[in-house]
Length: 311
Image (cartoon, rainbow, N blue to C red; front, side):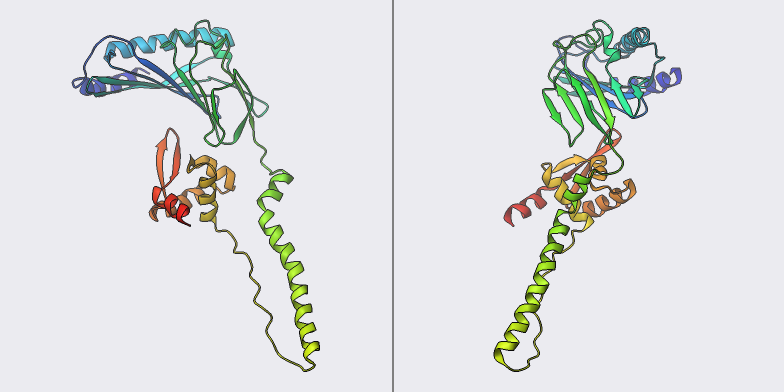
């Protein structure tokens, strides 16, 4: 960690020559990204017109994190550590945005294909000892789903794998508490039927339509009393949906924006295939991709949405 501090100090000195340092109130946002290796990436954002931004405030913040982490070690019995600490400062007029980021090693427990989150929040005055009351966002890996969560989030987005609480004041000790369960690798029978419903219906229509067409042709020949050579009417077979169309349909169904990992999970494509398909769609101007932590958010372009509305 000392080497990280030295590198960061040199970088921060260059930034802070442009920064204003003032005192006052600010808004707090906690973004916690859960990983499947028991770690979590924390990004704590302070936004306001009067915020301190200096090396001293950064070191003070790290001392707070270390103190809370030591209390969490005593609470849980697990050894923990801080990795990759960073601070960024953005000053626009009278507004200042300070972001603290770090990786919390051994943040959650992994038991029987489940990720259990919340025992660290058993530390008394957990959030007040960090930066105080604020909005809390928790995102979790695409291969997991929510088994239980307490208290009930104010907002929950399954497609973005995200939970949101508007504040921490109503949290009881040990909250939020979340249990994530790993999704089954093999699809359920109901999912298979749902995914192949169009194909099943098409085959059923063909199995009925072909015999009926043959019967009508033979009946017409007998009625005219003379042989005739006629071609049966051309059967219209539904076009098989392409892989690119599957991605576009998924984006429409979730409102036009979703994580890239969710697309891979929902379409059951490999990560490499998903990335190649998205690169093709991006080159065509159909989608745009934005970096979001270790993942990317894929968004349907406005031009594509307008084409869909006109059609």
